[in-house]
Image 1 (cartoon, one colour):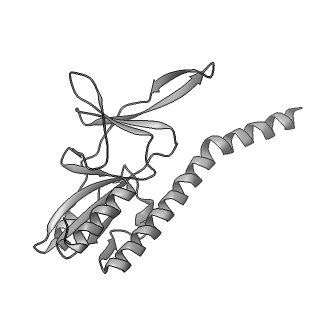
Image 2: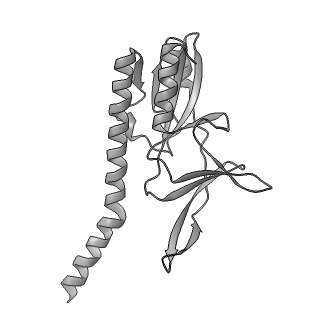
Image 3: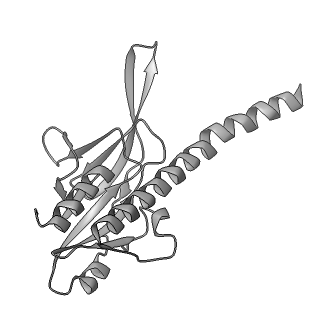
Length: 190
């Protein structure tokens, strides 16, 4: 009986902790492969700022990768959401938290707000060093992407924001949005 309980507890731990990490790792590998293919196809440069740039943490302050086109340089910071089905809420005060949703009685959805964390002031200066007269765009790449992204002002109603919007001087982007703007910049459409 005791060993059965321990087995069930260990299986639960795998589902709660290991599977979200594997999901995040697979999404990031896919992101790196797609960006490398795009840059190779468009003859753009892709330079990681550290060895395993595609595993960049949202807590690390430096940008993770710099993508160069003939007209623009994209300094990209990776910001991932480990668990799917969460809403990322960014507050005007410079904090963020994750809102999870629980189904009660299979039809009533109850949101639960997580702990507030300060949004670091990300350093995109490595992109400036590679710009050399080109326009630098600072990108916060949400990968894995949350269910929704909300912005919560000091007063008033929080609203949905998303790829292409500018928050705190940084452009939010999903992988598809980043690939689209890099392709447009490489082809001279931006």
